[in-house]
Image (tube, rainbow, N blue to C red; front, side, top):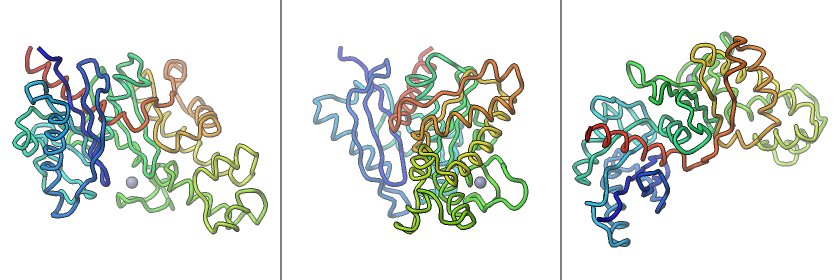
Length: 327
Ligand code: ZN
């Protein structure tokens, strides 16, 4: 009998990543299809089913080889139904029945979770987690995402909104407006967008000295990468921006750790590629603000799976579901 496979799907606003895995979480085949958000996102589940059927045909495999599909979706999940309460990027609202529709389209068992939670589970299973079962994952990208795992299980909360680390209030008054409708969220500071915003503010008041200022004058804009690159060269304005980011991120992570005492805090996403120029000051602030016993026992580590974390974690949730239903 052929080896049984798992399918992981990472559903994003522009692309859908799909991968076949063996039972041990090793990637066998991986590809992407575009996300069709027309027709209020109603073609998405059919597109995924067709893509899987097409790839199985190509490989000469049948569905009897597949244990199930795990999918990470960009919105809060109703764990009882596998529905997505709302996914603005996809046009889904009023609890879109993702699990039911994908099960009907594929005739396979489907497990659903939020995309950030899947990325956290991926890092736990195959990435920086390295055997740890109490992990907090933070993704610093265009926004700031998060996933909290305690004793190997994602913390979902009452309405699927647990782990929204990006929306921890970091500045109580006069903070910048956030996409969520609040002001002063950590995301307005520690995301790529937030870093650019802070840099532009500093450039306006900081005069016209230094490399970052030169880039701004020449290009009319700066990126988060420009901030990190020039900070490495000692640019004062860039270093000031990083100090602000490190203060708020270090404080936020310390408060999370003071509550949960995780074994690891895993930091991923495009901004984490900055490396030590960002991480060292974040760790410094983390140590300053965390309870001494927490400071001694909680490690801050970089994510290792990059963009694959989501599909790997999605495969993990369906593996978990199939194993549980068989025992
Ligand atoms: Zn927010």
